Length: 205
Image (tube, rainbow, N blue to C red; front, top):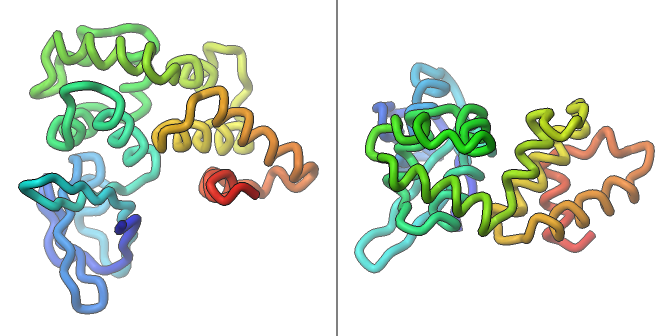
């Protein structure tokens, strides 16, 4: 599996980026949010990727941030009827922060304004992310609805929990695993980034 790429941009279009990695060109389909962040960049850039395989096609999707990729994976893995094309449309039509806020508030109207989504799909997104994954309560805490003060450490822990949920962990399991690592680190917990927390959980550290 290709998890990330580092290289120089050969061509950037609103829906795709061609990245040169040591002479090999990787064509990555991207949301507008990623295009806006990377278009025009000079020098080496990093793309987090998702490699999607079907009977008909092998496609590589690229994202400028971990939260974009996590949301993309949540949508295509946890919401019935949403594939990669729709996942990119969601990220292109709304920021990750706004998407989370609208799901928390059950704002189907706002979600349905995303091009290609529509009311029925928006309703399904809200229902299935809330009922199947139990992720909304985590988003509520992260947004302050749960009276949580979000400093850098808490933000890293919340991001790690969300990433683990996108990988198939249940919410309670993800939270328990992350908090065990934080407790183990003690005074060194401030140095725990979300990437490191996820990596250590997956390694069973």
